[in-house]
Image (cartoon, rainbow, N blue to C red):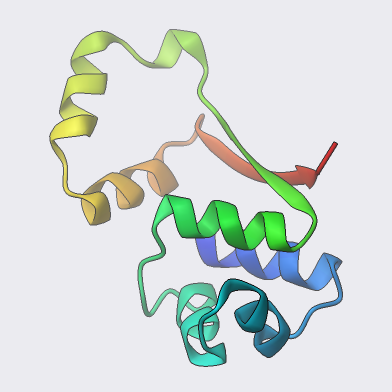
Length: 101
């Protein structure tokens, strides 16, 4: 699931407007809109805060057979934007919002 769609789904499930979520995070509605629509990259820490503000938790799942140390080194050498783009494109790496618990 694309990061923006993940955030939008978490926000919608909490019945929050973009403005209400922005207020909880101390940012603006336009920033939330940019994140949800992919116009601006959201840092993983901000995504986690946003999803938690919606009463959910962010879970990143990596299948053990899909990642080796060389792949990890390659990922860590990428810029945050490159890393996020690669995460979104890896079919077995799934981001999901689940109820906090």
